[in-house]
Length: 141
Image 1 (cartoon, rainbow, N blue to C red):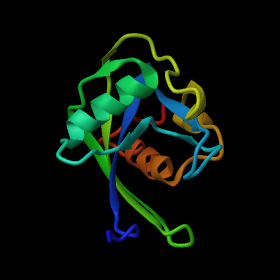
Image 2 (cartoon, rainbow, N blue to C red):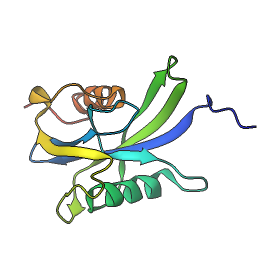
Image 3 (tube, helix red, strand yellow):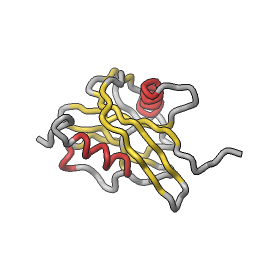
């Protein structure tokens, strides 16, 4: 029997446009009601880059080319028995218009400056925002 408490692998995209990051509001656990980066889980035998491009296409209907790894985040919730490790890519270009394609999973989306982020944020997004604010990431101005 598999151990459900083993870390799972996730992926996300920090999609940047005109100095703002695209966030989505989650309807489902974990962290239902929180704002976060779009993304999801990596399927067996799928590369991270393929997974993040697939997840973004499924969630937002846009095509991305994940090139630049922004950070690796840990989401550990011992009380819920969950541990996710997710690679987050910084994405500056995409094709299409972001639209919520999974209304059962996402309730809202929007573009936000780093100094005016909505709350609450997912744990992974909090970690990614710190990476975006570093000199190698997105500046706060």
